[in-house]
Length: 320
Image (cartoon, rainbow, N blue to C red; front, side, top):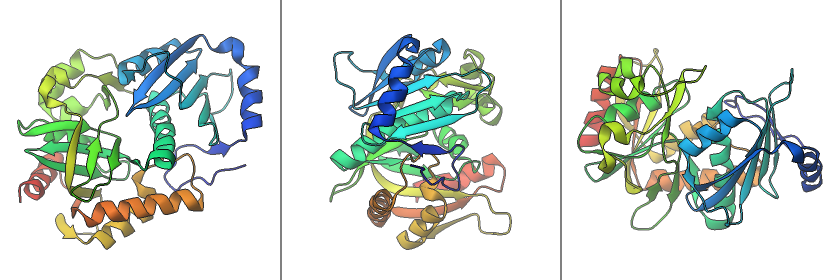
């Protein structure tokens, strides 16, 4: 089975059957040198790999799950000499095979997507590929297509004493009548080395971190913001969508929930790591975002100006 590639997806996902999963898994039994379990919002995701560098970053990135807990999903990460990037996923057993994925960011995002698949189907808990920050008691979400500044501006907000990080890249949401709650998903963040050039406050963090060949590193933001700068959840009140459109002179403006949903649908929910995109899954996600937007103030911020100017625009949105 082939899974339709989303417009933003950096890789193809081939859907496979449980029988195909068993065959591939058993063929590679001798290669699973490292096994580690991660606790992703109560979901146990097991990593099996022969690659020490993947195992090390996984341990830095995620909270550890007790090895005695039965796994809800699995990632098998392998490398073939001269082979091409390959992602296969069995949605019935929530098992993903990643071959020749040379960028850890995709490994961690697929792990989060597997957990999201489990939580979405079995518990009514939904994934958002975005940043969630509590700013003086107001839960703020930044959701954006790749390259529009989501990480830059979420980390920009963290420089303020009123800000507390929930997650800078992926969070889970539970819908309630009195307010929707955003929950964090990772122990530490995966950042780009240039964050210190944009916001000088992070230079000490960058200087003490080990960056990979892609210029990325798993870092503990608590080194800068303190242990109280990261909290487990917040009530979502404002949603900021980002775009980079030089043809639009508007820099920040409020939009309706319907306009926000239209933007998210046009951009594949700003999530290139959805493993299953069938009609049922897409309907679930559309209904979730509709409900999320209807209970929030929604704003569009155009990130064409320099980061400092855009940052001031975002602050005005949050403080109004």
